[in-house]
Every structure is written in structure tokens, then in C-alpha cells.
Amino acid sequence: MTVTAWLAVAVFLGAYALIATEKIHRVAAALGGAGIMLLIHATDAGAAFYDEHTGIDWNVVFLLLGMMIIVGVLKQTGVFEYLAIWAAKRAKGYPYRLMVLLVVITAVASALLDNVTTVLLIAPVTFLVCERLALPAAPFLIAEAMASNIGGAATLVGDPPNIIIASRAGLSFNDFLIHMAPLVVVLMIVFVGLCRVLFRKYFRYDPERAAEIMALNEREAITDRRLLWQSLVVLALVMVAFVLHPVLHYEPSVVAILGAGILVAVTKVTTQDAIAEVEWPTLVFFAGLFVMVGALVETGVIGQISQAAAEVTQGQLGLTAMGLLWASAGLSAIVDNIPYVATMSPIVADLVQAAGGNGPAQVLWWALAFGADLGGNATAVGAAANVVVLGIAARNGTPISFWQFTKYGLIVTLVTIALCVPYLWLRYL
Image 1 (cartoon, rainbow, N blue to C red):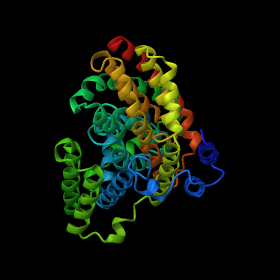
Image 2 (cartoon, one colour):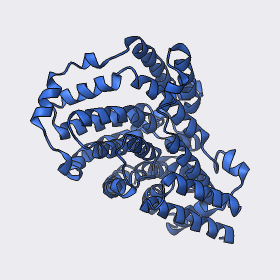
Image 3 (spheres, one colour):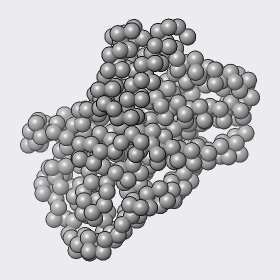
Image 4 (spheres, rainbow, N blue to C red):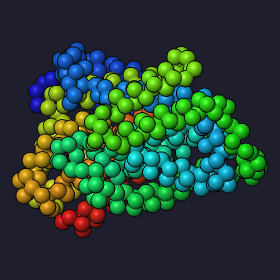
């Protein structure tokens, strides 16, 4: 590697260490790292701001912005209070039942939408229901972020890396349902069991609080029915457009911004109120992170690591698939899985062709998808959904530290990736 490449690695590791140890605010660490990357010419303005592979992923930024505005408007209707009471009553006030209900809803929604949109919608409900039952919100939020990453792996639209893989490999929506969804169902069942073990000390049942919840009428929580219907219609249209992306060819970011614009235009909500719930620090953090990771792509660091991992397997399909699965999980835990998959896809395409194209060689695409999607659970910055949840938690006075998330994420990732091994081996090899 060149001197610039080594400097880029040093800057990235330094920024990552600051984020992990929380010596300074993660936004400052990400922006500082991005600035130094530009300073040492590891990247430049063109690559950082305009290149779709090595720059800020504006689709992610504007998708988040649009959905945050929609959620901010929805919050004013009282619908999240309604859903919180409904969920608590269905769980009869029992914390573990409540967590199961929330993570299952999150996983299913993440398969139909994208995982970031799902956590934006479910987080306000979580805060309200935890407040009602005097429960700490952090464990529930962590579990939901992980469930969103697992559920999002099931479909083409559930996680951005899947869209990249589908485009490069020529895979359809149904291909992902057939090959990814069956194992995702198993992983969710296992994850629900893990939640019982990992978060058991937080499941404190309060009979009095539960009785108070059961006595409430959730319909009384709705404060503005007209605004609620307007918001739900717009949200439904946005969700339909997300699902029909392969037909409509509108990027999710465009759909989200259009939906937010229409909602603000047709309702009496002021612009100030509409943007009040936008997590600006989260958006800025993403921008800095994208620039840093893009610099690693630009200097060839990620490509060299991926290529070296491929060469170690020496063309053996089974060994290549397993190496790809674990390497993707490890790297996606450290860097954002979107630029990683964008970088790795051409290499996997070559490996698939070398192994005979279709048939058993397709296992390499599924190994890449499972590794990148599930590896994002390992750390607090491994997936977009994780970062968003941490931002929302901090904004609501319940900060989740890097290690608080990661100590659970590492266990969940090891278990889920380990379960992928027999599935891929028995089904394809």
C-alpha cells in the first residue's frame, strides 16, 4: 500500500478508537476524521461529495431526513402513544412479552420497508411504552436495531447492501425471498430466545403499572384525527413506493423527500414543527463516516483486504463461501456495509464466474449478503439502523454507549453468522 493508504488507515483507526471509547463526541470524531482524510489527500472533494461509490451516500442521508420529518409530523397526532398503550396491553405489561412483540414487528416491517425507516417509526413507540411501564428503554432499542438488521436481510428492499448485490448479480425480489428469508425466520426465532438471556435483568414486572396500562383506552391518546389520516395516507403511499422500487425506479430517498414535502404542504404543520424531530447530529455523523470509509475505498485499502481474503481460499468454493461470510461479517462490523458491498461485489462476480457462473456458485452472493447484513449487528456503527437508534436515544435523554450496544451485538452476530454456516453448506455445497 502507498504512504497515503497507510495514513488513511491510521486516521480511520484513530477516529474509530475515539468513537468506541467516547473520549470525544462521535460527531466530532467522524467530522475530524473526514477532515484529515481530505487534508492528506486520501480523498478529494469530488470523491467525497459526488462519487456514488466513495462519497457521502446522499440517498441514505435524504432518506433519513425525509422519514424523520414524516415521523415528526406523525408524533404530533398522538399515534405513537396509541401504539404504545396497545402494545403494552397486548403484552399484559410483561416486559419480555413486550420485547418479543416489538422485535417481531420490527423484523417484519424491516423486510417490507428498509431497516432505517422501521427503527425511525418504532423508536418513539418504545420510549412511550417503556415510560408507562417504568422500564429502561435502552435494551428494547438495542434489540429492535438488531431485529431490523436481521429482518432486513430477508428481502431485496430490506437492507441497502441487498439492492447493490441484486443489481450486480441480476437477482430478483423473489430470489431473495427464496434463498434468504427461510434462514432469517430461523434466525429471528433464535434471536427472540437470545433476548430472554441477554436482557433478563431488565425484565422487571410491575403489577401496579401493568394494571394502570390495562385500564387505559388507547383511542383517547389520539389528539388530531385529521392530521393522523393525512399522515397515514402519505406514509402508506411512501411505503408502497418503497416496495414498488423495482417497477417505479424511484430511489427511496426521492420517495421519502417527496412524501415529507407533500405532508408539510397539505397539512397545517409549520415548517419549524416539521423539522423539530430531525436528528441533525446523526445525519452529520453519517456524512463524516461515509467520507472516511470512502477514503479507504479510494486508496484501495478495502479492495486489497477483500482481494487478499479471496486469494487465501485458492478457488475452493466451500472455503471461499465460508471465508466470504466471516470476512464480510467482520469488516461490516467496522465499516459501513454499503461501501463494503459496493467494493466487494465486482470481486464476488469474478469469483462466481470462475466457479462456473450459475448453480452452486451462487452461494457466494448469499454468503456476501448474510455476512454484510448480519455483521452490521456487531457494533454500534456497523449498520445505519444502529447509528439512528443511538441518535434517537441520545436525543431522548437515554444515551446508549458504543460498548453498551457492542457487548450484545458481538454475541448476536457470532450466533447468527454461525447458524449461516450449516445453512449455506447443506443447501448449496
